[in-house]
Length: 611
Image (cartoon, rainbow, N blue to C red; front, top):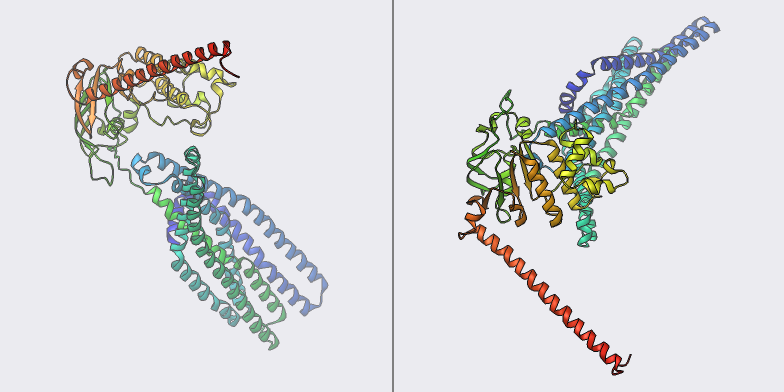
């Protein structure tokens, strides 16, 4: 349990005043509950000794007072405790989300979204449960136990010792169960994360699943994961099934022993009847919250597991380091330079980029071309420091980007990624994502530049139209144009388009590229594309192959020499020839069909053909 208490302490400290009030209310409630049986004992003893009924009335009102005090303190306790636990849950979830936002992309390449979601929701909820219910029961039971023990010490030392005999047994059982079953609880929570992971992955890729008719395969895959979670959960159920009844049995056994000993002492005249009644009522009061000790132990074990899994997030190291108090980058120019850069992904033996030396001048527009897997996307992801190279230096305006704050470096670079992620927000909010204080006129202007304004206005709600999750209600081309508008609105000095018009028709693409080119001014631009039309507005072409720059120059220079670029152009020309041949073939086939129809019509007119 030490892990849980160490984890939760900083959050409890933030709620110091509420925590103190909760403890005070618990002690008041425990005191009131302890005084009720003692008042009964006092009333019985006084009545037996004096035979005065008015003393019974006084005892009644005393009991009513303490009962009311218990009710009021209990009501206040639940109100304050729920607010306290909910606020701590809020703070933990906020810290987890803040930490996740600060982690670099390497963390997300190793950790599944399902596990992250399980930690952010389920584990935090587990902590809230123990804080909202478990702590109150635990402290109330301890307080009642101490109150009962003090009362018993005043009544009979022997009864108090009998009462204490059961405590070491209960503590041993709880401690042994906790230590033995810790991994079972962790495995159960981990398997829950796998279920979340499978669900998230399936629903995100539901189109692919249905396209390939793999519904039954996915059901089988989920069944396997779900079965693993069931098996792990059943192991926890076994613990619950034995621990909770075990606690009740031990408490009931102690009550029977106390009843037998107390009854014997009463019959022998060692204690009076009132003391015996008070003693039994105190024992019963402890039994009520004590019955939950098994559940409390389970909750504490679950909370300990939750704390362990949340610590794994909060203690995750950032591989992308910032120097302390890093200044903001303020380059005099927006040139980009790769100086002997090597890069490979974590756990990979092979370099994705090898000895890249490349200079892109301010205002220059270059195209990155190359086969699939040649390292184009990896190269551009190094510019805003999504990753750091293993060797070499990347500079913007002659400044080593590792020496400056991440945010200031990324503010210089706008990327339109391949996946064109859109949030479940309005179109207006999606475009303004990179510039939250943008006016509506600025948003419309960016949408017009990206050739998105016309289709946006066709929606009944226009710019206030809510797009579905990941922009599912829009076509691929529409998503791409909104993503382009988002970057154009942000207006950074360096623009990168990573195959960002692949879903746009050629006519729209031509207008879009002209708009972007006219809008660029002195901005530095990098384009990754396999379309030859994207080369129209670029100054230079850089060819990558197997992570190395194999050609660099203007179209006129590269087309006149053998190499990868010439092969690229030849392949495109071959595709065009094939299309022309197909078109000519289709025309010939169409004319032949027309001729056949004409002959048929002539034959029919002469009566040479039957219907």
